[in-house]
Length: 392
Image 1 (cartoon, rainbow, N blue to C red):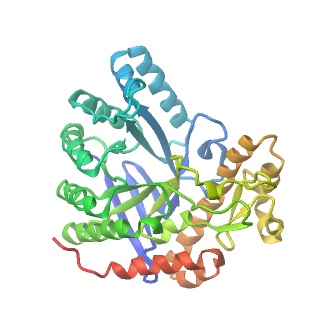
Image 2 (image 1 turned 60 degrees about the vertical axis):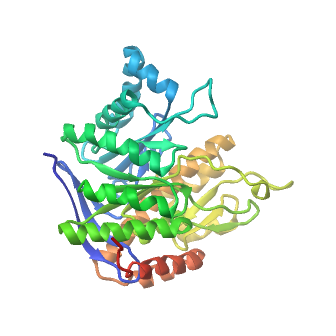
């Protein structure tokens, strides 16, 4: 049997923020955490950041369409290349760190781009074997474009296969879906006896899906009450929130995942449709947005506020403000932006963890984050809603 546990050490009453220890096999990390994305690019978050205080939890995200899945299942050479790409990326991570591998299956084909097919029995079996092969846990794949009802039908077949393997801890993946569709999925996971979960926000910040998050947290609390074992909840594909390009600063809504019931979160790998009103207007220079720990703002990289001495003290990290501002191209600036933000968010997660475990006031800690005042009100409302009993 696999060795897994999640133990909550301290819980905030002001929000749903908490500090705990996640153990998967012989690996353990303290939470809350920022997942670092690992890819083949040397500028991916996990490969660029070498600060030990920011490291510990990694995620790899890979999209597979139907044509590719069938190619992998039928061509051993293609399968070897696919496996090597993932294994090579994961091999560059410290052996003591936890790595989560997420697969997203897109059932469309090149010949039928508007038809999204559900995996058949053979494809489900192969997806189960793929998801079992990599990382420190088995995580059901995201099914792009599928309803929650179809996903539940898929899960029933998928779990018959992966539970037979039984050598790795299994996560329950909560898909992006309507509130009404969510309950049967959560009940399925509850009946399967799971305690590890990840929720796909599909590029949205947690407060934009507050009702779904609250229902999920209520169910997890009920599981904890029934089993006596704490539940772990990771956020996948967390969005930063949208802002007009001419705005010098925007609230960093993604970091609030850690006070909205999630024990860890990672960046979004989902491209959202661009609204016309959010496109740069004439005269606006391209700029990326950088996370500032002192007030939880995402500032334009050309904003003079980033020259604050308190922020410049962090220039000794793996990626500095000068690195971003002096990037040779906008695509390079985008890559450096992701590393810049991920490292500072990972360190901020550590500060939050220390605040909770030292019994300091998390309310006072968050009170200084002036750029997310409105979002924090939403988070505290979410926490208050958790007092509502779970309906059977």
